[in-house]
Image (cartoon, rainbow, N blue to C red):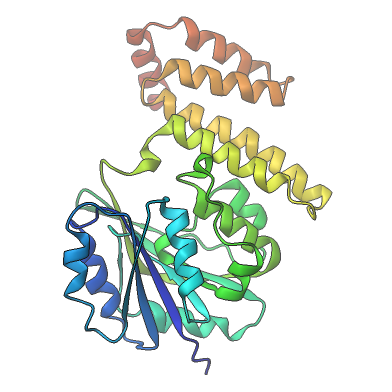
Length: 306
């Protein structure tokens, strides 16, 4: 059986409120062949003091660097890691004890570059289970939707290095993980453990809750992927489809959050990609002139139709 060492990277930035739970969850692994790399990305709170009590643990290593963002911290962690496999966990998420035990064996297949799992999504104490099943060639599926939660990932270090790790551009903030999963899915297979092995926590500080910023980031991600030099014609077509789907996705999100202007702009941009879809142009123009009360009534009608 394969016995590859895992390096688990936790990017830390002012995370003292939740970091202890994250560290404890990782150190509780049933498989011991791992190192926990705590990358302090210029914290100004008590994170360093909290981490200090774990430094006597043989699996824990601490590094402090100037603030550069989460992608920069993850790249730093990859550079100093000594494991053949790389895992990620944000400072406010948690791993379940059997995560490494369940995921490492799937790397016996040399074609597998990344293994993810199902995840518990905790929204202020209410939990739902995310159960994606895509595996094998996942480039097309990941263009359609980012179904891989970062805290579930274990990836080969060699593959991460081959695709140049995380893009540290600020424009990708919030989707830098999706960008690297797509690059990995382009060159290797993806495998999934159909069991929840991590907990992702939603709270008011999640960057992904900002639809305007996430739209810009997702479009940037797709644009960068579409510019890769070795894409097939089919993969380029998938990128164009993904751009259209992104506009439609955020139009829906903004509509239900009473952002009629943002929804209108998304629908207009989607129409420009598919000019024969006249209903998109009509919907865009309608949202421009609707009052807030009319928008609420329209949403109620749409919900009843559903």
